[in-house]
Length: 356
Image (cartoon, rainbow, N blue to C red; front, side):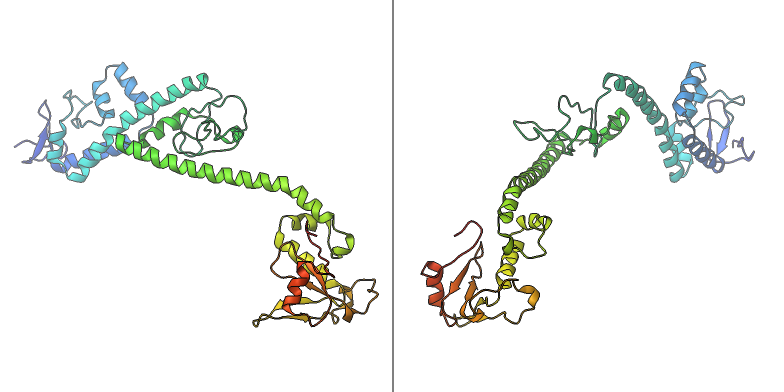
């Protein structure tokens, strides 16, 4: 029965190196777990492994690779590392998982070292390259105009990210290309051709929908900008007496973009004059007139009309755009007379935007 070199007790189950040094299972488990934890906290592991390989220190290289050596390695034992199957047979499952997990530290460190070295080389080759602000896809090379919205979507030109569809309107909004980030995000690529085709189709559809909505917004904004001066000029062409006293140029400009506010302004202008009435449609199909003689004096015009207010009736036709106003010859006019008057009979007087 071999004697353990750590606890000096004779144990039935123990792992033995090539030079005959035995380590019992009770001592091997904390030894393997401690080496795995220490390796995960080692700085510059790739550089230290290269330095050990340069001085032909095979034991140190095996240690940096995550292999399990005899506890007496470096203290007189020159045996090679244990096989993984032998370690798995003498340690618990959680310890073996940590032992296997620490084997990836050196390959990852070497990969990162290569990426950093390649980054310096690529940064010199593409000093003006950009990358996607969402998925770090790059390098993206923009030549010519820095305004990416000018020809975006025209003639097959697509200035969005070719991988995820992200888009920014100006070149300054795209981050500088970082080859390190591009290499690290490469692991997120689809694993199979089918997954790649499905992902590409979904991304293309989402990108087309986003571009379509964006272009619709651009068209609406440009159309509103072109039509705003004409709408404002139309309102400013009204006589000053038609405008409410509190109307300013700013309010007129806002009203030019809002038809509902324009209707409200016209109705308030019509109701300012004494003796005017508003025609309302009753459930029975008839109309009735409401007098506004009792309104506050501030609502009335400074110059009263010559004829008595009761002899003059003007109607606001509801539901029409532009709002129409016409005189009624009689207070008790019926709906047929209203329609006839609005159609152009004698006494007709209509005012509106572009309608006479």
